Length: 258
Length: 254
Image (cartoon, rainbow over all chains, first blue to last red; front, side, top):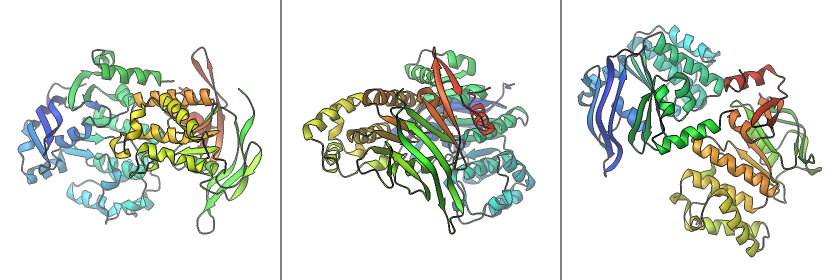
């Protein structure tokens, strides 16, 4: 069940690039604790910019950011870099869209995971358990590799493993299944679902794949041209017919069902 | 459907590595009929793209033979009867040439009469839903979807008998997918082009293919037959556990 307390509140968030191109326009969004929130939208509508700004990962030299992002009442946008790092270590996990740039290129995967076991006092075994759940059976071989020796699909799974193992209270996952085959994508989505339903986590998942929203979401946000056009619970979302763009998308989605 | 076999693969294997110890394709036997739409699916690394490259002649098989209209061919078909649309279609365009001038180079490759090319160009652009104006642009001025359709136009100008598409739906939104499926179906009906389409999205293939080959670890494990009766889809011929596992993962089978 969704509890009524907000873990995250975004108030009037606008983001523009420095030569003044508006990417996000006055976004208002809130996310309750233990919620599975899915943000959908076509390419180039601002999904990734929104998720990066939630973790305050946008480079301030290139972007103008206005508004507030409250995480448990704390405005993320006004925190110092140290406070932010602490928050990202303990509370907010992020799974990046590009798995190839998610790891340190000059260290073996094992070394990178070991660093985390010290930093966050995670038992090393929790990495292995998650790797096995995601069909990375030959974990001993994989752990000895450098990131460039691994495929996009494996790196994407490792990136999810790294994030889930540290059990943050909020996970932001940007297209986390884009490089995965369907059976493994389903396994990962089920793990995300358990994280929300059993481990009391909160998940914000960004995707183009409407079937993910249909299967797992509590609430769905629809971004179009930098604006949050619709923010509804799942049932109302799929009945919403006042937005032409969404109507076209849902119509195509229905047509493609077998 | 006309059951004339346009393309035949006989015992195709492809091995790579130091002592040819890695088998990418294992003894593939396949007959593709004239004017059918054939899908190839499978997980990453199953060999689907490699098979497409072998058919197009961009990759040489280690053993086995391939035939087009019953004549054996080895490398690229010299009559340009087989064309391949790459997954990275943006690389199919010359960044320094306007679209039209790149199209005109086709005159040199295949001796098409300029009037015929002009007529055909109009017809095909119309079919994929692009206007003539787009010919005056440089590739960098166009969107990904437009570039993909233009790459398709370029291949169709060569009047291929077999058109191969490698993951044409990758990273496209559903609206674009529906549109592309419509275009491919029209190409198939209008020009009687045989289409081979590679995709890991089985539901999309089921929408417009007559048959779908399922690959696993370099082997062709099943060839599904898709029948549509009263708008209801019937999938036949799945024998392996692997295929039903894949179909279930897409919720095509329950």
